Every structure is written in structure tokens, then in C-alpha cells.
Length: 202
Image (cartoon, rainbow, N blue to C red; front, side):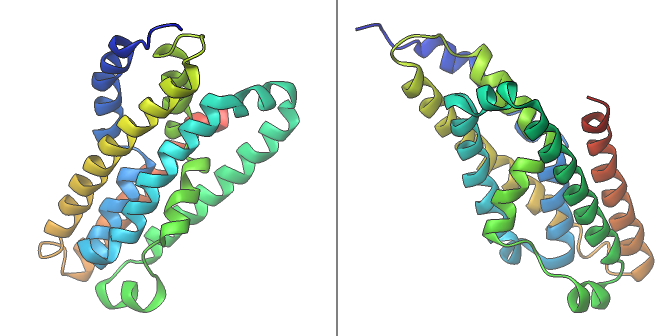
């Protein structure tokens, strides 16, 4: 029985922490939700991300990448579907331009929506593939390695979305005026669109 490469799992921590806490679609979405709806209302969205990303890592690490390599047309179709959905989410953020308008016309993402966003998250795909290939060795313990990395991702993801949602919720008082709220949401929508651009050119 081959030994479990614990050192590689530990080595993944700095990479996962840096990726988890830097701006990306998930963090932009929860920060925006924190501003518009508050911390408590964003919890289902946060939990969806916390479950959805490690689950994607598991699936990618255990073989989905091989399917996409065999069927590149499927990958391309899903890619453009993902881009369209991310643009829709950016529009939702931009539409929540004022406090009362946000409450009337939009709602925070649900648990299922938060989990589903992982499949349209270009940064998430890069992280999942990088982790599954860089911090593992191909031996009999590979499924256990992927499961351990997914567990690490779950903890780091929960911490990062909590921090970004709290950041957004703390800005609520400052952004109570319609003009400030409008420009914040426009900025968040623009950042989300910008995060999609690299995916378009890949």
C-alpha cells in the first residue's frame, strides 16, 4: 500500500488561500449580496459556494476533465453557456441600483444557485484543475487525495466568502444613498464581466 502524500496536501494551503481570498466571481457576488441584502440573507448563497466548489473539485479530479478532453465540443458548448449566465448575474447586480429597487426587483442567490455558479466560474475551473493536477500523485490513494483537497477547499472557501460577505454588509451604511449604491453595484457588475473576459479568450 503506497503512503498518502500528506506533504503535498499541506503544500496546497498557500495556493488555495491566495486563490480563495483574492477577488473572483464568488467573492464579487457575495460582497455585492452583502451590500444589497445583508450577511444573514446571503448565508444560503455562501453555503452553496462552500459545498459547490469542493464538489466540482471532486468531480473534476475524478475524471470530468478527461471527458472534456475526449469531447471538446461539449466543453465549448458549456463554456459559452457559462459565459452567458455570468453576464446575466452581472446584469442582476447592476439592476440592483438603489436600496428600495434592490429589494423589489432582485433577491439573493439561493443555495442551489450558489452551488451552480461554480460550473460557470472560470477562476474556479482554473483552481480545480490546478489543484487536482499539481498537488496529487497518481497512485492508489488518488481518490483519497482528491477528497482531502476538497475538504481543505471547503474550509478555505467558507472562510473567504464569510470575509467578503461581511465586507459587503459593513459597507451597507456607507452605501445607503442611491448614488453610492448605484455606483458600487455598477462597479461590481463591471468586475464580474471583467472576470469573464479571460474565459472568452481561452
